[in-house]
Amino acid sequence: HFMNNLGIIIFGLIAIVYIIRITRATKIKNYPSKGKTIVAFGDSLIKGYGSSPGNDFISLLEDEIGRSIINLGIPGETSKQGLERVHSIIEKDPKVVILLLGGNDYFKEIPIDETFKNIDTIIQKIQKSGAVVVLLGILGGIISDPYRSRFKELAKKRGTLYVPNILEGIIGDSLLMTDEVHPNDNGYRIIADKVYPILNKAF
Image (cartoon, rainbow, N blue to C red; front, side, top):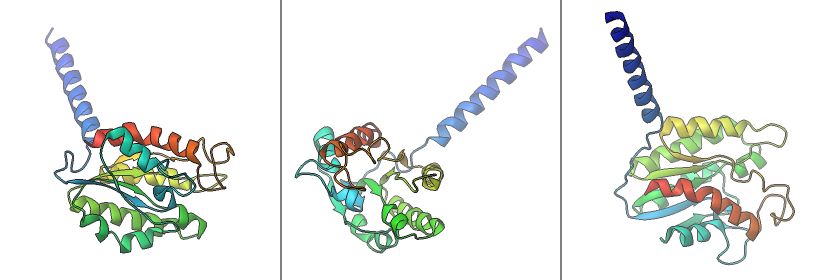
């Protein structure tokens, strides 16, 4: 009888430890944030290149969450250039930052370790300001995608919200793309629908 009870107690303790580990693993750093603004930071995808006015995914997200988002996207930007202007986010007193970089690094064949070191530093600087980071992943190769595991590891390590490869199911589809790299209005709508439920967790 005693052994049965002991077994139940041990099982209960294991279950509790497991639950604590799961909750700890999914803890989002700085949530809930005391910041004031929502900022979108990154390259041409953040800027909405290829969309008609108001149909970029950041504008679509604004409509869905009913809040304004400051768009700090610069087409062609690399992770290094993003790191050099990270102060432009901090001065906005951000509550939530949507972060999307890495595509231009891939096209310019910047070493993957350098790219993810820069993105990691950007995340840490944003988090130091007290904001919640929503990290958006992108494709890092046609045959294989070494970026996917790196984005996932980074999100877990730094406690960010995370949306994997936002162009999955879009890139390569001429009905959803305006060129080889940038979506059209229909493509950006799909991205907004992917990002919305994750972004919503930041508030």
